[in-house]
Length: 319
Image (cartoon, rainbow, N blue to C red; front, top):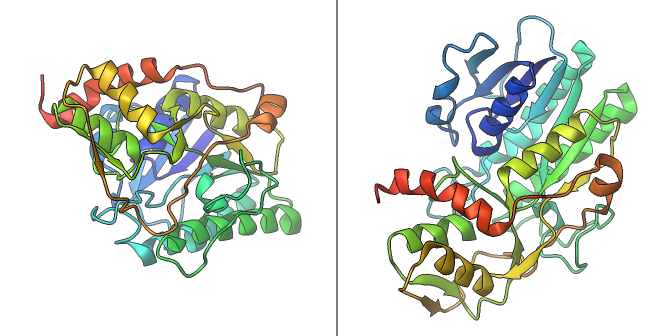
């Protein structure tokens, strides 16, 4: 297929480019580098099956030639209020990527009779009152909170995707992505893994907020990409959770990182200063992914972290 990937220079988008190229597809990458990095796709320069356009998906889009599938992954995603590339500091751009960007991509899909896959997020569940989170759960969200620019953009994008499917017959699918990690992550992302792994590699004590009792589930990027591609090849139109269902507390996670890295600096507990409505628990129910896609994660946390460490060391300049 000839596939358009928006957000191609991002963490997930660049891994999707790699995987789909190895499967023989022709890839058109698109990114405006507002959060993505040219470094993530530099290795694809000269690949005759890869072309790249620097574009803002919120503006009018034109893609020359036939397009068979579109993977819409363009959006700021970092929850770090201190990061210039986080959605707290790019609120309008984030909303436009989810609204106008999704609309533009769906327009191309409709005109080209192409498959459309939307990258949605576990954040649409908000701070969940149902655990683990199933696709049927409508969420516990705040449409006017500071995090809403990301959450509500994705919720709108899902609604628009289903509207195009129902009204125009566009062949759509929606993946709800849970916490993912691996090489090419932004070290200033603000999520638990880059924060803690960076501290461990610098021989610093790991910062844990409150008691560390809040939970997350961590999926290695290769597993996530495999699930997304299975969904792309499927006939499923309703949202599907893709993530690792192995829930653990942040304290347990910090202890595991210190053990894997061999960091002797231990853990420092600080007052809970996490951002507004930061979810207390996060765990995907992947029953639908297992039944519909035959998918479940295979890479263990220890193995995934070991695969991620060389990239972090390179970025940090440590041996």
